Amino acid sequence: MADVESEQPVPEHVVSSGADNEIQIVEFLLGEDKFAINLFDVKEIVEYTRITPLPGSARYIKGIIDLRGEITTIIDPKQKMGISSLNTNMEQSRIIVIDSSITKGKTGILVDDVTTVMSIPTAQIDQKTCDKDDTSYILGIIRHKQGDKDSDRTDLIVWLDVPRMLKDMGQ
Image (tube, rainbow, N blue to C red; front, side, top):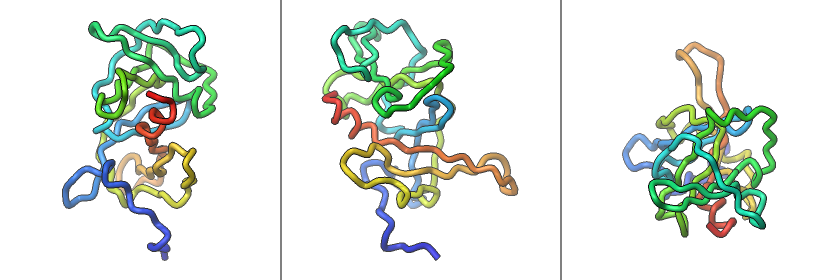
């Protein structure tokens, strides 16, 4: 039996409204692993375009792009979180542009691929296994069953707190 008292509730700012208690996420790849962010933190998803490096900037700042006339800073979450990636196909890479209500300036994160947008019941989120310190960018681990109801395959998706990550980076 689960220890209900030790579970932290999913923060209100990341849960969609409604009786279903679901979150809507954008699932993406960083290296070989699946990650997700709250759909309401995303303004748009764009195809990879050439990124101009910014000399002297932090390692996790990949550079800048011109997105429809606006300079957009591109963050590499793999650099920030220490995720290694041997084979990166830039043609599959995407830039997830973060909603301007979260950032100080126009900001995007570079991911290896965007796989899906979906709704997940909050009951499928495990928050007990995550560090609850001020340096963690993990909101929880999403257990997502693949295939039909009888399938045993469950994907584990790391749910990231992008607003906190960007705030820590001064974005």
